[in-house]
Image (cartoon, rainbow, N blue to C red; front, side):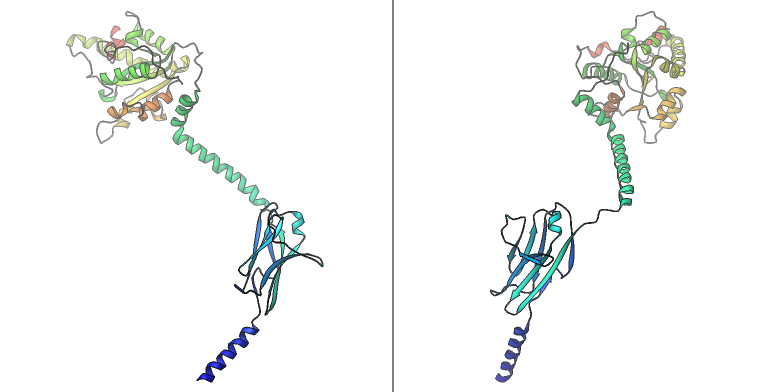
Length: 371
């Protein structure tokens, strides 16, 4: 048995002595692509991990001239040996560095091995990639920009106005930012008297808009149609506010005839509103109310509007009032309304009591009752 173990030991020593050192990477004759100006490192790995009699180093050759590289890290080209491997470092690839071949050499007591490599520049991308890729990239950027703007355009515009101080010019000869014109809401529904007073108060006292209000700014006794048209002409925006008939309306029988005449005059003004707005260069903002029931009547309600207002609603030039959720200035209602109104630097004009602002929808304080 002892002779058997002795035989195995002798066989192992003989095989170990005949083992040749080998460089694992890079392969001899390998061509490595580099980029001008780039920092490049090439690791030479060997089959010898720890051997006091082994050495791994790099040389550079051109034609028949061979030059040993140094381990000085301050040089533009150097190598670093560690644990049976050596890393060739080129700080910045230049055209001069490309003319050399680089050889990794491994030497041990059992022999030596070497692997030579050469460097070439990476081929530029094919021309068709540039020709096709750049326009595609440009289209993608443009489309994404449009999507972002359409999605966030209200917030973007208000940010530019409020934070960057970009405000439009008002030298257009107009006296008011907006004329608030109430009308009978579809199916008799609309803003309550309290909501209307709050709408007017916030626009003037919180946001600093100059409003034309018929019951306040028009002298009594003027013809209704002419007075309303004058208000529209002097305003940059016409804000149509749907009102509920049961808000502040006098139900006395003696008022019935006046209310019928007022309704006809009002409906006549709305029917010819499109041409009037074009002539006076006044833009229209339609406030609509959210359907109070789960089964939405939006299409049916808009069908009861005058044709010009109905077409405007279909085009999307509307701001939706959703009751109490629309009251905070941070709500989408006020953002959309401010976006549609002229650019205005926020200020606080002198306070006017809310009690001085009665509901003006086909009631006793309506501009139409003077007809």
